Length: 146
Image (tube, rainbow, N blue to C red; front, side):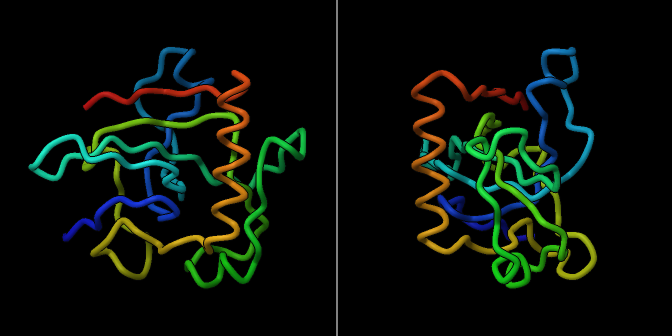
């Protein structure tokens, strides 16, 4: 499998570890899910990156400002299901790319971990709102180990 270069706005399949699972002592995510890369910084010459991802969930946020809904046309273009989905802004996972928690896409193309890119305006809305939450201390990160 050829891995893509991690880039902001790329949606990948990943075994996401929710902050609540982490604080309960779990080290592995319970479910593989789409996640949006919001930052990717190359850390050395061998292709290792430090990557920060936000989870995509079908659960509507308790507070509308805690997530950004993905439009149905974008979900279809990415090959996601038809249910409503949101990018969660209140938490993230951070890991070294490539990492053991990347997952192949289900069903169709099992040669990649990437669904595709979010549209630039949608991604900018997500990124701006996430940075505001993180700056206010209302978003929580989980640093994943290898």
